[in-house]
Image 1: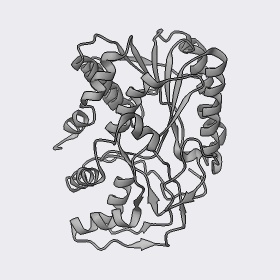
Image 2: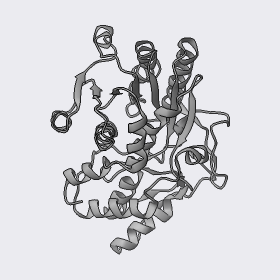
Image 3: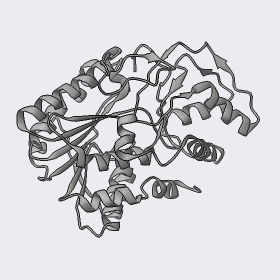
Image 4: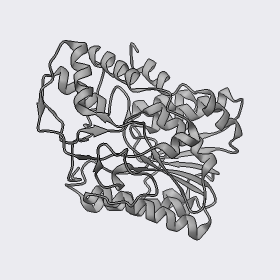
Length: 338
């Protein structure tokens, strides 16, 4: 990947299952919260897959304040861009009617400094969207943070296991799910809720965090010793395919890769590539934030990109001094303070 244009092309390159999903889907698609880390590539993936399927479809990217460069690239690729602050009911009312919605709005970082806004974004705005699009099918992103820490050798909680969010961010995410479920049942709106842990691409994610620390000869905290990872295109592809599995009450899926991976071993793999002996702080706790994605794999198959390819892509990008989004994941956080 010589540059970001090539990276964006890779992250939005449709696979045959996504092309088939877009061929089977009826109507236009709106991505609410399209200005975030995953939204632009998801919008581009949906449009390219629709074109490959021979389907004429509007892909509408809705964002509060879209980055000018992101806006220009999406417009150039054929997306419709709509600026909308979901806190403004007049703006929400003016959003076009669509039968398919992917809801990606959320706030994680900054929670510790502004808990009220985090709760408003994560628990109130889902109600606004659910009421506005009660006649659509909705795929909504959530987080594996709704689960408690679990034994690192146990495979992680499944969708039927009890939730146990740690900290206000995770609690507000569970509130998002409960609000969406309420409106799904009340209005008969079919939904799928995706509990994501952790999407990876070279500019952002757990692997980028670890790679930067190893290459910069900074210590890697291994207290949260195990993580689940999924390549961002695979996560976006499943989100689009999940539109066909929306239900009342919402279908819930853990969206990640398996098995859980050792943070120490990931750092050592980067270190071997660069001839660096990683430095570690603390020791692995017996529990970690994990998710069991067996149900998701049963529906959609094993994610296409495995961990070796993820490491290769991230390492190559870092070696080229490729841009970082400058947003550490804080995957090592065990008290839920973001």
